[in-house]
Image 1 (cartoon, rainbow, N blue to C red):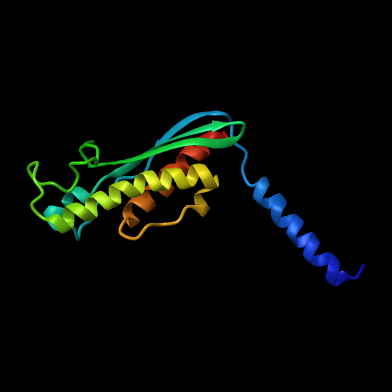
Image 2 (cartoon, rainbow, N blue to C red):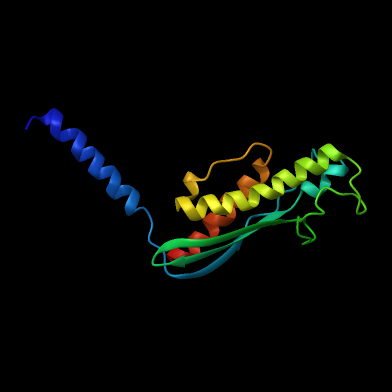
Length: 148
């Protein structure tokens, strides 16, 4: 066998071993949150965009088996189906729709982490970049606890 034939096989094996052994987690449930995000450029209506993310990750057999991610306003109010409303009403349909798309991205990020098993494999969703950054930070904090 020539070096040219061996090298690709060795590289493939090395990559496979690296991917499989990249992290080892203790079984359990780990909760963490991101730092608070405060935008100094948000309009008064968008001030609700300020907040933080919180994640709970379940590890079984050393693998991520469940993940829940939610975002909250700075006062602890969940960003739920009312997120983007003003005084309980949709006063700006575009803002409300954007807020709800960002909220829906939280479930998508959690599902991606569960199925892909790695923060680095989770893809950002357009319009939910702040949530993506909060997700990555909270997930990294939770997974750091799982390594201890």
